[in-house]
Amino acid sequence: MTALSKPVNTLALAPGKREFGVAVFTGIDLTYFSLKSLRDMSSEGVLMNETAILIRQLIDNFEPRVIAVKAISQYQLTSSALKLITQVLKHEAEISKIPLIEISLTEIKSMLCNNEKATKEEAFRSLGNIYPELIHFMNRPNKWQNEYYNNLFTAVSVGVVVSEISKSLT
Image 1 (tube, rainbow, N blue to C red):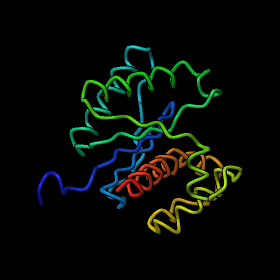
Image 2 (image 1 turned 180 degrees about the vertical axis):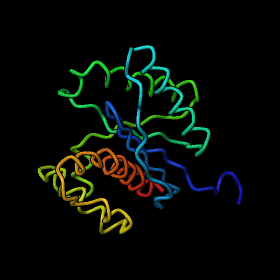
Image 3 (image 1 turned 135 degrees about the vertical axis):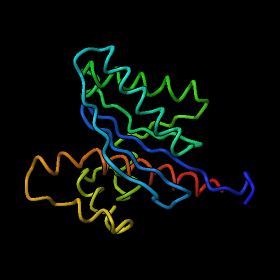
Image 4 (image 1 turned 120 degrees about the vertical axis):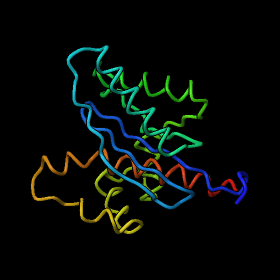
């Protein structure tokens, strides 16, 4: 397979204050998904360093040609930690010369449910139809478990939106 015919690797991310949702797509195939934890948030410098290391490891491991990120909402911008994480993420993409695309929750709901007014949970449920391997992580018995996996589903959703956009352009 030549470099030109190689499917595009998309690294889809949903940054959170503690966990990063990570999904990797080769074309439209979901090839990897996980949650990565940021352990030490003792200072801004440590948080920046830990985030940069995580992003570099993901770039080195998966060699993405595109990075897709869940756009931070106005409400989330009040979090200085999340704002800092997002800045580091954008910086790492820039120095790696990898295009970064931000995908909003509205775009996710529109793509997965054909309805911008759908709920986030409805959008996530539709992922189970596309990727049955995710069903195990849905509808957990405890609220904290559902919240824990939120960034995982968000990352996969972001990747689906980018994959569908890329597919329609070819």
